[in-house]
Length: 375
Image (cartoon, rainbow, N blue to C red; front, top):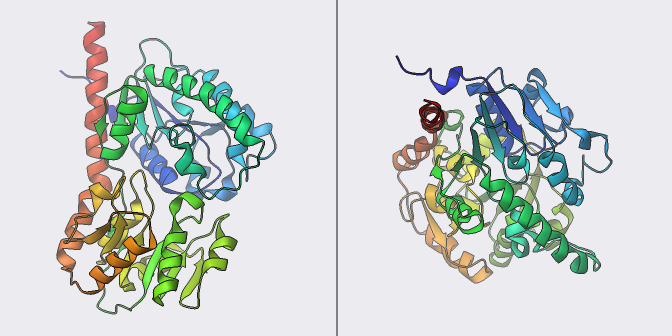
């Protein structure tokens, strides 16, 4: 008689921080659905800034909860995260499952307890610093202090990565980063996307659409500048610290809709001419959602988009993050037609059921290997 499935395992979940709602938090909710009794260990937690469903979960913030700035400027606390997670010991679990884009993989795990890291990306501001800081208004003194802090933090991060039992990457691009920065192999399990809430429609407009947090590395500015230059209608859904700069760049054909409820976002996606995805993302849930809504995607050929968009069938790629390159892609997509059935079928590859099955298989393999070692 074999060991029970991972779903019956006493697990602990670890997450970097819970002060914003995005794709990482959606994944965390799915992980908790797989392990509903598992506590969630995190640096800090603000219930008003995340999905209300987390209030029903056993969320355990650490000592950083008592510090200032974490609600709005948690990036400025970067030197403290290795201390916070490196000294945090997870007890009473048969499995530790971290949902990590920064430092939480560094928690202490008792000997013999497997640690599976669902890696959203190796820490961007450590390993892809220039890309992450592009467009950020960093003070001059930071240009002197930052290289020293980054060198120390990279050494810590790489050491922490060696203690992980098994990495699971969210995309081909992230698997390559794990290999390059940590010297570790990984399995690939794409994140879950709630494709069932989208419905294609024949009532399609002539505007393009972006749904994104408005922060510099998302490169929303590229779409705003290109659509302004071409006089093409663009709707931007989302909020963030880059809002004022983007509005200053925008011409009269660009509309900012702010934060919208999920139902309105679904309708916006189904009615756009095409969905724009100009950033280099680790995976990118929104392009999959757009395809589920029956609309093609215009994406920068990098990162997770290469796993989710089929060039010429469910969208088009552009090669450089320049106005000229995006302009050409917009002209291409305007001259093409796309089969709704093909768009929806491609999106369905990323359903939550598939995510849970593949991740459970990966965890079962790790637990079986541990049991074999014990025998």
